[in-house]
Length: 349
Image (cartoon, rainbow, N blue to C red; front, side, top):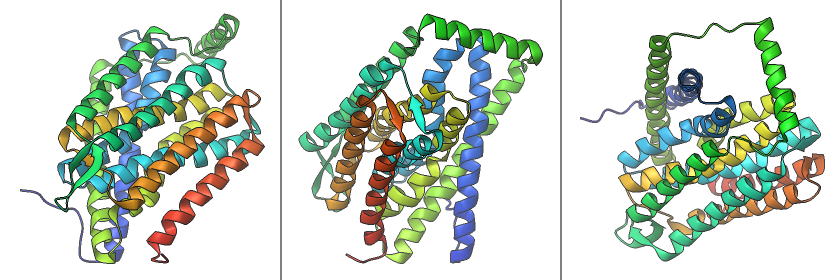
């Protein structure tokens, strides 16, 4: 029997929503750290962990909340959450990173391989929604992604992840890699780490996963309840409020990368997260339930996501770095994204 984690009081539900968001993010953080420790015990390189685990791990809140929404037959929440998270990651997170860092340098391969692949994934998503019709909640076929499309996205996710693990060098020179390794050795010599036991690693991973599941349920239940009570589209709430909340891990990693002068990590984390948000989350959710892009709001937000991808490629291609001017451009795009959705949210159109 399904039990829903919300009450009839608005204030209580707001607190449950915030609590669910905190549990979701904290659980994701615990799960990421535990997974990294497990990966190290299996002698997977730190570089490969960063390219795969960090990007996938910071997408864990979106994955958990979207999968739960798929089982609860809430496709608008999924589309809004993922499309909104991607747009927020590119425009707000990288915009803030460029403003704070002043200049975000990155390897050429990050542009020619990963950013281009991310944009191709965006275009594939649009193509799938144009060519496919899935049953909508109203009974009328809608543009969307069916189970075959979801399977294709998951296959691409596995292929991309495998290619990253095979090519653990993210585009830095061998000299830079040696310097990083020397710095890591020096740091480990000064502060020798005590590796946790396997039982502790797996126990923390289980705890983090449990927190992610509980946080996801709190988040989705209260968003759906609020949308129903206020008469607002679930997608609009998820594309703004939920998308920002579930993007907090990406923001934390990006700012940490900027402050620690690890610009490849800061930019690569966003690009990787956006790619895996589509391939992994849309793919998995479409296998559970076909996803429809219903109404003009879904189509416009999908177009805004593609536009953010175009803007990022353009900024990365000019000068080989993201500067403060690029940061302002990206932030202005986020403001436009918010204006469009908040006008709907406030009932002004």
